[in-house]
Length: 482
Image (cartoon, rainbow, N blue to C red):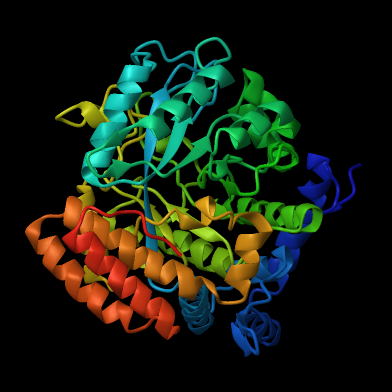
């Protein structure tokens, strides 16, 4: 039997079933243990040091106790601390991005995804390089600067060479004042050599959802295709880091398996990356199973309520305080609004989950990977974020200044992010307002920027940011960054 070892490179040792089951038993036994819960909450709180604000995070066992806790006032305390941590390390910035679907050809048999090979009534499509350019121009015309590219797993139709060619095309498109400054990649688990190629192509974060950490369920949900190999899939982040990729993004598809099991596995995966590579996940995504062509989410009997979803998000924020957290347009405006306060730091805007969807006047549904709940335009999302006290950020500076991996985390842990990310957010928001925003959004944005400039602690940085913002407004100068 495999023995739990967070430093192991074997999936069944760093995501250990026996350890998860013992963790869930311990959490259940202690879910009303107020003394223990209070000590865990005390450990989770941000605290001041000479070098700024710090957080110790939580182990998977400690975090699982909080997730199991059903005491209303303690749950409120969890939410309050999550909000404190979010503000301490990410401020009120929300990073904007959009997914770009390149191809829905796929050889896997995943039971929860409409791209599965046996689905014969979904039209199969793969973008040509000209179509990639057209999609990128459409995204640039909205104001996007950061993309997450997506493709099904198909070694014939979507080989690594095709993905690399698409990345090159995306970076080559300069339309009016538009540029995609960072491409994140969400493609199937691959080899160290291929990860090295992605790194050389200049990608940002490599994202791969585990879907479920429960091995038996994983094998049943992925009955055919290369994705059936649980170990190869689960060990992908270690190969990515071996291939030189500094930033990796984790995620599970909540609703496939018991959420407490998934949560423990997710935190254990973050602990494993920290133990082996010295840096945890750059991002954690929290998608839920949603309706899609040929997929009925009610077929999965582990779906979770909005309240439990909020609690999961807050507990992740306490356990892994320095990670970015992502929520997609799978979720409604109301759900996204609540989760933004509890730890989410990145959202997609105006997403289309179909191949070639951005160039269509009407949102196409025939090749969608899942139904999009939040169907607002990017301008509407930006305006809504500002109404709720957030700064929509189109910043990609850290990637291009080499602040990735442990360098980003050390900056974040020392609280220095506020001296570069905050002004960068304001400058990139100004670009959006000048080049793409509606009149009402622009007016609202300028007022917000004026208020937020005053919060930059370093006077020199504040004055440079103010000068750059005036240059963006009054000239064609773009892409200032700290």
